[in-house]
Image 1 (spheres, rainbow, N blue to C red):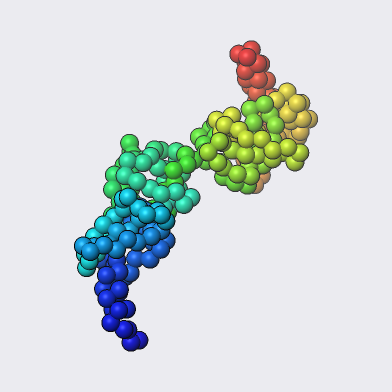
Image 2: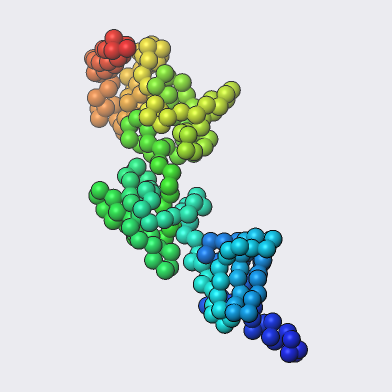
Length: 241
C-alpha cells in the first residue's frame, strides 16, 4: 500500500507499543482505556478523556508505550495478584494458599502450610471450597442432608454458601451444617428396626458379603446392639440442645 508524504508523517508520529503495533482507541495503556490522542510539538499523549485532557501518558515521538501484561485469571475468571489467598481446584481440600509469584507464562506459585504449588492460573480459585461437616468436599449435583434431617440437592456453590433445592424451595446453607451422610433420627431408627439383618447390613451399614457365614450382622444380637447404640447417641444429642 502506497502512502502519501502526509500519511507517512502521521504514521511516524502515531503512538506505538514496544512491538511496533499501533495504539488505537480502546487499547490499554498503563491500565487506562485509551479514548483520545493529543499531538504536540514534542510528542504525543494518550488519555482516557474525550474532551481536552489535562493528563495522560506522554511519550516523545518514536518512543514506544509499554504494552500491558495480560491479566492472569483463575478458574472463575477472577484476576490473580501476588499476595492473594487462593485455593487449589484439583486438591480441593480447603487449604489456603498465598500467591508468591506469577511468571511471564502466567504460571502461579502459591504457598500453603503444607506444600508449595506452581501451576497454571486456572488450577486456582479465590472461592474457598465447600467442605461439609464431615470434611468431605461438596460438589454440584451431590445429595446432602442438613443437620435438621432434611434432604437437599446441591445446585450451586457461591460466595454465600451452598445453594440447594429440595424439590419445592431453594435455600443457601453454610456448608458446615451439611453432610453427605444422612443424619440419624428416631423416624429412621424406627424404619431400620423393621429390617431383616441382611437388609440392615447392606442398606444401613453399607456392608455386603458373598455368604451369610461371612456377615456378622445375621446375628440378631449384633443388629440389636447397633440399634441401641444409635438410640443412645440420638438421646445424648437431644440432651445437648
